[in-house]
Image (cartoon, rainbow, N blue to C red; front, side, top):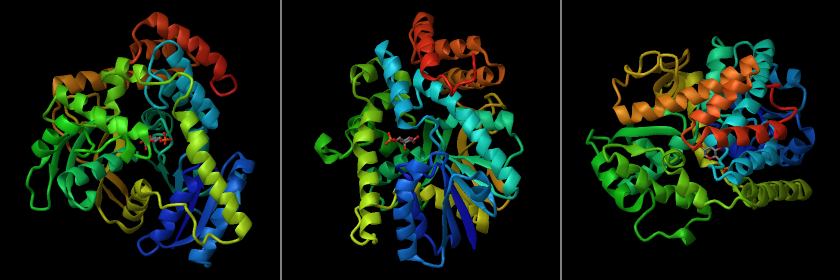
Length: 439
Ligand code: G6P
């Protein structure tokens, strides 16, 4: 059976991922679960509760929480990596600094996403190096954000490492599609998709008999986005996601032959997104005041009570992709999954060296991308601009280059002028002292 380490053990997402792993022991039997974080204090607040969750489900599973990379990475088969360099207070700055200048403030899109990218690269590379040193056969299932820039850094800086970059966003979208089309599970449908991470389009959604349902899906989206008729903000506990689901309507209207990833809203309608943001209170604040308090509070309660009975912690449904991916690698299931991989000709008329998000077949030797063919001019143009932005951030990291970072920010579709790009960059440099290489 299998041993896993969760890198970024102190994440608010960790307990629900643990519950997801524990709910799937029949598919993915585990002998050991480790939590690893460089912030031992933060991780410690979750670890006592996680220990109880595991013991109550299966006392034969060994549990370790550590800040020592050697202990963390020795004798592990999978590393589930979801590190957040700078934690939520730095996310807050990524979001608020651009908004001060009327530019999209988001953790993976726009200047804040680029800032976060530059911060994340050394942390991800450090973890890959520990993994290779202590467990050379381990696979890293990497969903650390911002996934697109992190993936490009992996391609360039650690091209031969056993790292698979993956994002949960498609799972959330496919859940909505299944709901809209009247299916119980996203797994009943077959999808075709191409794009970059947080930047792509579904070109086909088929039912189990092979009937094409995309026109029906798009017709719905043009009216209701990814919400259901009659649904309102009150039906959503998370209002940010309600807005995102609704906005899909506008994105689809630009090309009704495809069902888009909702993050395209930040690139195609940055003015609307900014108008809709509160520069004083962003998503980071919502997460710190909401999920962080809830999860840490509940973990403290469990630790105090000595039992997880009646816990309000829920299985992270979106984290199911991690179990699917690990199971595919461990047991050669040949599951088809969307991964972020080198294009290498899969999209014929696109940069072979771009990291793209496309369907792949996953088995014990890794993944094989499916061929996509050619893509239309509108999507290709948008993607090429964005992929160059992502590449420039990795250039900036490698060359310690202010100019490359300025070019990245000026090229981003979310930034209206190079004047604004420079102001935002200069402020982000100060905010990221100690995290960024010296530019
Ligand atoms: C989605 C995205 C992730 C992102 C997350 C943020 O799942 O795919 O890339 O990290 O949302 O969620 P949060 O609740 O922290 O804003």
